[in-house]
Length: 145
Image (tube, rainbow, N blue to C red; front, side):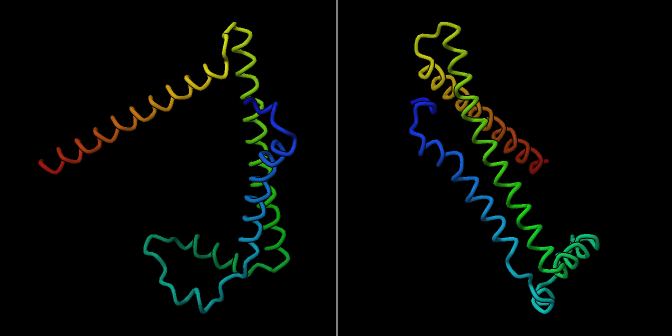
C-alpha cells in the first residue's frame, strides 16, 4: 500500500517515532553524569589513544553542567531532525518512483518496484559473496606463501 494511503496517524508515527526516540535517546545519553576522575583513572588508557583524545575526554568531563545539557539537547535535535528528514525523503522518493513508473506506462508500478528492489538486494548479496570469497582466497594464498 502506498504511503500516501496510510492513515494520518500511521504516517505521523512513521515520521516522528524514530525522530523522537533517536533524538531523545541521544539527548538522554549525553546528559548522563560524567564519569568521575577516579573512575577514569581505574580504566587503563588504550595504547593507541593519543594525547589529543585524552585532553578532549578530560575537557568533556570538566564541562559545566549547563554546557553539557545544551550540547546534549543540540545533538539530540540534530539526530532527531536527521531521522525525520530521512523518513520524509523516503516517503517522497517512494511516491516519486511510483508516479514515474505510472508515467512510463508500467501497469503495476508497486509490483515493479518490489521486483526491482529484490533484484537490487540479490545483486548486492552476490557482490558481497564474491568479495568474501576473494578475501578468503587472498588470505589463503598469503598464508601459503
